[in-house]
Image: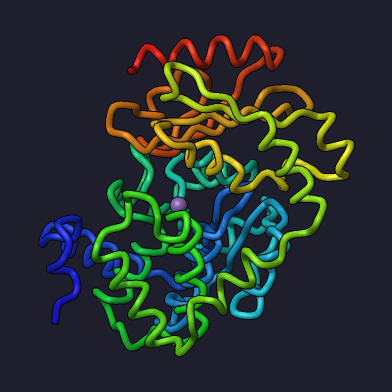
Length: 337
Ligand SMILES: [Mn+2]
């Protein structure tokens, strides 16, 4: 059975995009693969899966990220090492690939220098509005995750190259970028990909989810409990907010990274269409926006505050106090209703 028949995203035209990408990239000898700064499960899983794909097809691959990996994803390094890049190294490579982001600045200071080298830069990503600098972009906004696109790359080329490490890495991105298969970006093709990865990698879903979700430090749950107290609804219950302050970080001994996933809680309140997480960082208010309704596009909303993302998930920031941020951000959100 052709799994891709199940999904309108993956029509004949997309096959063409993958084939062009494959025929061009396999002509290079040494390729550097970048995942975005403040890395998550999708960019790292895609990076490991794709670097292994290059290696299996005779291309020397190096994987780079400018930041530390989250602690619960260090196990990926057993499959493929991810190192910090240096500007001096860049000249060693024939080509570059950026994953799970479509603007070079998302990949850090070293990655931004790539544009000046005059060498081909490739991209695989599912965010809207890619920069116009890529040799051969695979840009599918309707895909659940970049890992789903890397899975598709294997499927278009030689699906039997998916072994246990590839399968586990790609499964990680499918789970984390879909809120454990809850978001409306999940299509039949997403679940077919997940099932096929479990089959080929010979593991059960909890092998990955235990590593990711059952390893929370207690202090993170203490922080969550304080944050949950701040949930409020606005606009007749259609918009919810949650707030994390510097004081909460101090009291619980936590940091910015410990708020991962918190934004889902206000979204789960009955009747809420969209929500905003306000996080008081050192120099700004970080905003995470989520929507579960077609009537609120959080990508548009975030763009009013120096950010962007997808229709249903986006990030932004506000310079000012928490109080000012709430007032300004809610005003823009309510205008969309
Ligand atoms: Mn992603």
